[in-house]
Image (cartoon, rainbow, N blue to C red):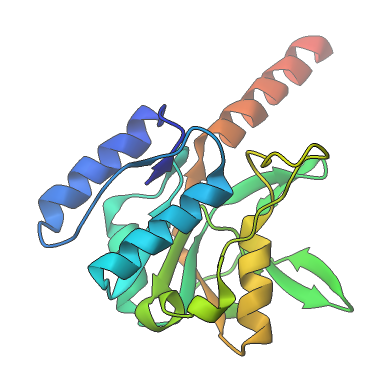
Length: 200
């Protein structure tokens, strides 16, 4: 789990459940208070050190459920994600995308496994052969502010997926592993409540 040090309680609890169900897994909370892009690169380096078969990254504000997280490596795909709602461009959508005429378009949610152009990294499983692509380092790129400092967040998942596409590595989404992006869901509920109270 990647965190800035303040994980959502339900997200932290899912780690405890995973530890009980999968005592042979190396399950850790990785803290980086500065930059999620850098945190992803640090976790990739750790997975390489352990010579892991798979790396599963869950963001600290995402709740998926232990069964869904454990299901991702079973597909034995190079890159596979659960599906997590997100907020972008003034609307909610699922962070899995097809490329149509050079434009990223979020998919319509269905069921089962499907190949896509890109996925968000909030619930992401990467197989060992992809982790070993050191010639593509950093696998997750960094966005910088005008003064050269790292932006805390910055589409590093899209950078990763573009690299996978260029290297003919398939990216998949399991539409039956659905997570809850807790901070976005809370924001959406607050907006709904504000709209409802202004209507009355």
